Image 1 (cartoon, rainbow, N blue to C red):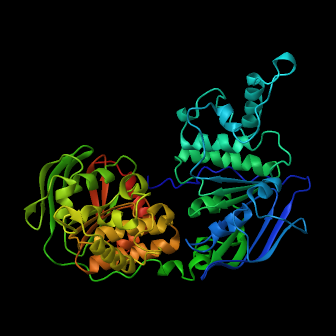
Image 2: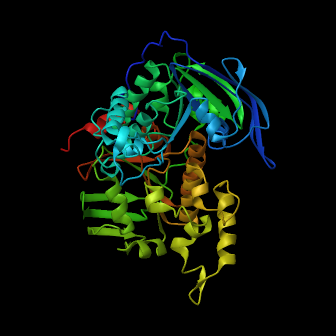
Image 3: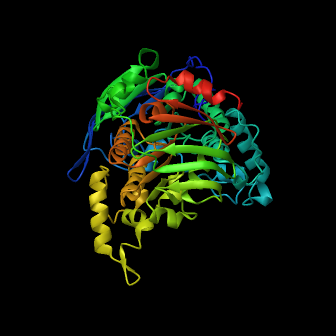
Length: 521
């Protein structure tokens, strides 16, 4: 949904606890993997009772720093001090003993077990005393789980319900609450790595309330996220890394989005979008007249070669349905032509006709995470990469290497599993696949969702480059600056209808948002 960016309902900051709280100081941290230098002087300062955001592009060193804190990797050099005393890490057990807890967007849960059982996965179940010794004390297990959930403000979660019945947000609250069960030593540092990537706005709001509760209890929260609005709403201080090195640590009230982006990339925000080319004047390549499909009514538009048409609208307006209808994934009625020929009615035929599509949910609908990146890139193009029914693997690898260079993909080669790539590089795999056959029409659904600002710049450059080569582009995005910065025109969808079409040049976010909220007349 366009107007409600996550973080808008975050709780107010709570005063720091008056009790003494730990202080973790990291300086001069360096780590190399063979010839690759992942960290080159990283620094971080964490204090109890605050939320500290860690920002940086993919490849900036955030993940390596977290792996060192978690005891999964040893640094080559640098110091880690807890309250001024060197902290021996190097194993996950040592990190746990230091009071560190790590929560990721992909949670480790057992869906078929209850909430209380999931909360006790990493600890012994309570046992009954006396003659019944050795049997699980189920009521004690559920009482302990309920107490921990209550401490987190998550009383709405029943301890006897199966984890499978909850969404990702409540599952995350359960995993956080599990750290509040009695333990020695008690946890004090929580590392949250992209925790809201799979959450709804309501689930995110509950997570933010839980973070405020932990902070009020004296915990330190290291918050890693690409979502700038969340960081600005939650963080007390913000540290940025670039190319493995510490750039700056700033109190949140003393910085802003422009400064953070400059710290992360070395570029000003005004340089984020490549400059527009001349407005296309060629005859339309795509013509829609009275197009209807599930969620769409009487869509009519023209799109010229090299033109980028942005599609704006509130949640449920039909933005995604429009792209799915054009790629042939939804049945449609009305007239739709590409270069004067009827638009294909199946995705396979659409790809063969020069229509490329990048879906919103890259992991569910785009890539094959466990397979080689060359297989994801080749998937819609197997007909021309095959001979006598067999895939020409040499031709596929050659194509993958060329496209990887074109999209500035960071990988170890065509055989690397997609799951090992960062979110931004996974998105570049989809762009490589889309551009493999020089498409005439490129359909983009939230093309920068879940990628960092540096990868966004690369993707914006790819989109502009495709348009400059004559590809017509339809761009669906919930990011208003992105729509305005990339598009030539922006069509407003309301309840499945186009209610306005605005020139993007000179358009303000406020004016675009007003148009999205305007009633269909």
